[in-house]
Image (cartoon, rainbow, N blue to C red):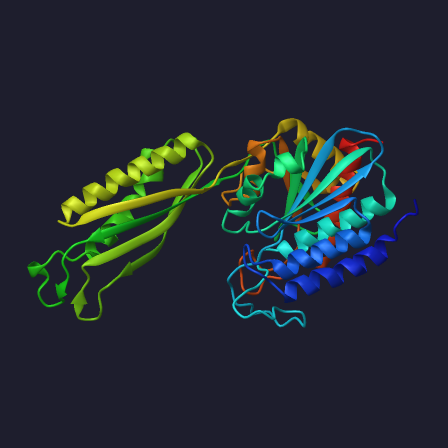
Length: 385
């Protein structure tokens, strides 16, 4: 098989990435993106390309040799409901949507790996290229699994990656064990009796109670959990039905919580319910707590982390490969696959870009080949020819 010109591939990938950036789609709405991915995979000559897995997911299969092991590589495809503020020529053409997390880059890097491996081979076994919908709200991996992913496209292990603004281009990080946190979301509804702002004694207004509750919730991490357990409880919204001269009779408090162990998640919920009930009683209102678990913790397999570092040694300079010092309290839908097979999730530097989920963010195309080459290096190491 002929070697692929990497400079030409990078130029081609840059075009793909910018096309995807200009046409962002929300979770489970990635019809154009999925069609683009499937068309490219067929163009590369994969053995099988299946669309509509878990809604809008795509799975490509590439086989070489007689090996009976299979490895999966995963990229996410969805965008966010954010209005883009960048001035690039390829900025979003879909109002209110943008690729503010770099999934356009992730999809492109995996497409590049598919083209590279299909054209050059260098492995013995089966590669599953998994293009997942709806990562941002934690539903896409479950949808693909519920659609029979493991039965229809079995694999022994899985690898994934994410770009990391602030980490220089050409740098690589991962770590064994806890890598990214769970995310729980909550809503607390306080109900009382609103009334005129001039007569608070005549009702049971909820705003002062809500303010006290927001403050009291901060004691969950600072006073009720072990300092050895990394956790975060964040209130992100406080909404009432009051107005300038009317005291509210209803207040809604929304937010999320992060943790790395199910026991900690359970304790956060328990303490939140206790604090909400006690605060509501103190202010003569009622409290209802809704608490749900959206993302599970992401724990990397130690053996596959070692393998990822070894593969990275073929792509990155030794001094640019590092063990991540601590887990990240962001969450990642990739964790759902790790309930079924061992895997490893890594971070690749994306340079001096705006932060993720920022309206001015734009994936740095100089990082594309690093991701593509890492994917290919992992396959060739784990499915040695």
